[in-house]
Image 1 (cartoon, rainbow, N blue to C red):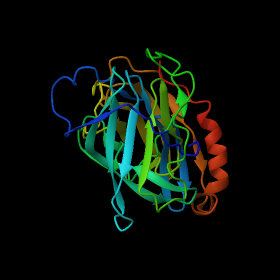
Image 2 (image 1 turned 135 degrees about the vertical axis):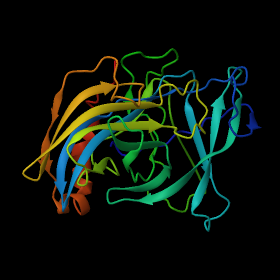
Image 3 (image 1 turned 180 degrees about the horizontal axis):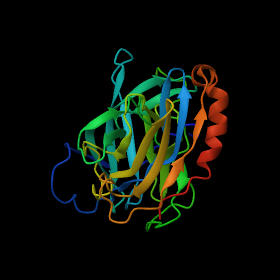
Image 4 (image 1 turned 45 degrees about the vertical axis):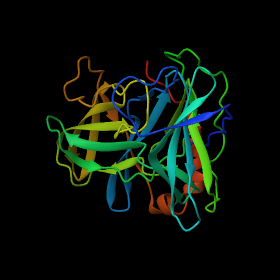
Length: 302
């Protein structure tokens, strides 16, 4: 992923506090974001140590009426987590604040250390025809930012230039406050194998599986619609001589049920490569620079 970015604080004329999310239409005048989960892509198979890993890129774009703004804060350095509040801009230039929509934690990774919004996006693998997840991610969270511009289906009010271009308090574990977000018309992505962007497939038998990516799974973040918060791909896994062979059978935007797609895409073989233990544990700084260049060529869904 491009080095994680943070939101530039937005100064407004006034802010009103609002309780947790409730059902029903948003308050009048609110410019809510709309988080659109991109279909899992950049699928790769790699052998790392004693495990076979399915790597993937994930991405979420904001096609709503207003930015996603997250403001984290804590009372003292003794508290390991920050409370995450969502600031929602309004048509009159003021804003509402929804308290406690999540938590932020300072994460130390081999490639960088900064504040992550936890449980922003989740991944799972399940067998086709079943609703039970066989493997779930251990993602450490996300540092939100404007990573790529929405090209297809650009929303009204899309910004021509990115705003959230900070680094989520990079190497600043002592911070008491941090802000991050995604502007209208921009998206955030993590490339394959970077910071939890993979799932182990060693224990899976041959058969068809569905890889599902979901954003805002608990609906604590306020947005215009929750109908586009999941996307999936249908995969066919075959083991031959102890090695996995994976074919992508279908790609399903806005659906977690790609095992029953309305219009499946053409089949595509997932490439296999080797990832050494040194790459995984000691060479991530150099590897990240290479992987980051891939995100510039990310192709948003039509």
